[in-house]
Amino acid sequence: MRISASSATHEPVTMHAEVGKTLFWEGDECDHVCELSHGVVRGVTISEDGERQVTAFFFAGDQIGLPVTDYYRYSAEAVTFVSYVRYARHSWRNALIESCRSDGKLLKSIGAEQDPIFRRGLLIGRIGALTRLAAFLSSLIDRLDPSPRGLVFPLLQVDIADYLALTPETVCRSLRRLREQRIIDMPAHDRLLILDPAALELTAHLGLRANP
Amino acid sequence: MRISASSATHEPVTMHAEVGKTLFWEGDECDHVCELSHGVVRGVTISEDGERQVTAFFFAGDQIGLPVTDYYRYSAEAVTFVSYVRYARHSWRNALIESCRSDGKLLKSIGAEQDPIFRRGLLIGRIGALTRLAAFLSSLIDRLDPSPRGLVFPLLQVDIADYLALTPETVCRSLRRLREQRIIDMPAHDRLLILDPAALELTAHLGLRANP
DNA sequence: CGAACGTTTGATCACGATCAAAATAGGTGG
DNA sequence: CCACCTATTTTGATCGTGATCAAACGTTCG
Image (cartoon, rainbow over all chains, first blue to last red; front, side, top):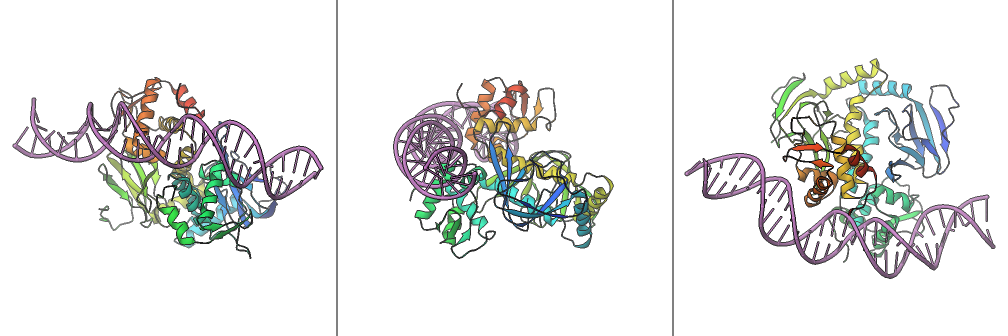
């Protein structure tokens, strides 16, 4: 069920999405840009043979669904409860042109959406489940909200698996290994503590083998 | 050795690059856009631990190095002898704004560069060396120039390996398997014949297991 | 309380990496 | 034209990682 096209106006509209709801659908025409103000969104594509992939995770401040292609290349699904502002393509385009004209730096928001997707490619191009997971967590730490008991970590392991091109079992085991090595801790399923950022970085960059 | 910044003018310049030469470097500021008029270019990144990845292959007609980020995210290297037109960022920006205004479709050239990168992510996120290779070849057939003895296929297997996140050995064996199955043929090292496009598509999309 | 979903753990197996070496192609100079 | 050198491809053998299958456990929500 797609978002009701209730407002015929082209002005920006503030909207909300419950957990699991879809902001826009893969294959639909790119006629809305969503600027996230609160919550986490995952980009999802389903291959023809039904294989699911998570192409990126997006956070508050990110703009997603920019019309660099005619049709959305992924579905945007709410991982948590999400608030966002929806712009019609036309109004967004004008903003872009204006921004292009004013500052030398242009297309900043486009880079902000494309870059995570680009980096995922690099991530899963590297070998080693532990390496991938460490690099992934490392890239997340400055995007997650802090809380008394650690960073708020609302991602499902299933989604992480589909993001890293691994199975849920492997993600689980790799997380356990990081816990055993006292690099991270997870006091709750949705809490993450980085105990040793340096070791995490090291695990991410070195082509480490599995067993100590 | 980078391209000499001979022309201080900001006007478009037609340039050439020998095999192996670099059009622009990963990490450099994005102040030039290159529009390929002839030849094949590979996008290359080197991870901190020295791992090489080929992020995309580009062909005649493609524009690369668009300033969606401040710095180039990959080096552009000539796979074959390459002719291209180099635009200064400023002049390109004006062209973009103009194009934005005129037709409803905007940012077409940006999509043209970003889309291959996006699709590589999807490709290597799927399991199976044979699947990846088949999907890769399938995506190439309409970009390669025809010749009397098959499509001109100038890509090195090493590059294909770094593109598909496989080893050269695996690429070689997978190619052999496709030859054995009479799906493709390679009369020469730089020639490719698609004998059975349907079977190629099938191999690409089905999650096929290895042995018949 | 029970059902659905996600996580955890265990056991086995297959695919692709790795190591090693031969074969082929490409290029250069005698 | 052949000898020689390098780069790339090809083939073989072994090994290890992560997929797969199966089942138990924990959470969440009706």
